[in-house]
Image (cartoon, rainbow, N blue to C red; front, side, top):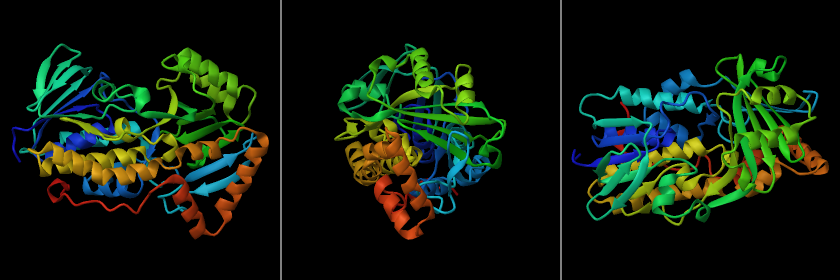
Length: 414
């Protein structure tokens, strides 16, 4: 591999660190810039399914992932008194469909990737990792991408990978406005870490969800039994005034959930003091192409399917594996590398995105009557014959385990 190839990765999340790891293994010098001042701990629980699990195996990450994974054996649907309405185990669905048997926090998965990068042997590509910085301005020509960073530093690279998430600033700079490529799916999602409410099913490593008309409240276990992750879904028209305004976001949550039962009062009490409160629109990102010149997008920046799919981490890992593999295969022909990456990745991404708007409507019914119907259907899914249930969920939730990965032998961990 030519050591003259220099790559800039924008974003130090799962997608950015995964592609950096594979590029470095290929001997490619890689710079990563991450806007945050340090790695972010904790965060939302993420799942590994299908091709994502296969990629993690090939990248040599599974042993560390297993040590970091949550003890979450399934999900219990409850009423306002905490009584069980339905119980869904990950084992019943093979750990790879509606529920996954590999769950861990986003921060823990990122730490696994960073540890693997730090343990790379001599002879790997040279890494330059910069926290607290981002691309302020860029220009590209036939020879290079020239970049001015927020820190004032100026540099040039052979190619730039945008792995800076759903609200990608790089996508906006190179491809166009956010609204041009995003579709609001009719709901908001929020989550944060809080003390585990006593007497919940989380004491036995089961997550819980409490559906109410137009909303849903969930709790998921943490590696530390003293903590849990609260998850809030609110179905409503988009409100641009909510963007970036935490006070308005939390006011909306209190307004929508006030008076409801189960552990809702504890969630509302803990919300203001949560160290990692997150609230955002559920959107999917669909683009006609993921590359322009020497710039290419990866992960949520290119093909976010929304948190409803449970496949964001899988798409990030598979995309990173494919993109790095194709760059390593043809480092002097970026057009070929980007075209192959898109050819291989688009079927998986499109399959995951299919039906996400319908899924939001199904999982967040607006009326009590519609909610009762959904709960009846859920009971059938949980207790019905397994084969047709799996087939139904595959059609509803998109492609899962049928994807065939190419083999990049040189980038497979020993």
